[in-house]
Length: 96
Image (cartoon, one colour):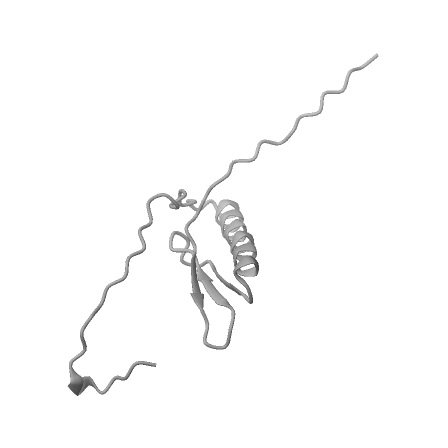
């Protein structure tokens, strides 16, 4: 009798930082700093993150298919900071 051995695929997980920016008309625009061509959007944070997973996977698969380098995960190295600038009154800008 022949014994069949099932080989389970091994998946590698990579984490990428994503930037969610609220849109004036609602929803969120999403970018992935480590993968400049990866952009998407979603009506909710959950939808935006699900779409981000899809676009990151698509970019990685496309790069792999074309023999291009796949940038390593950057999730632990990204810093998000805010800066404040003082605009002189002569600029004519007003806050929204």
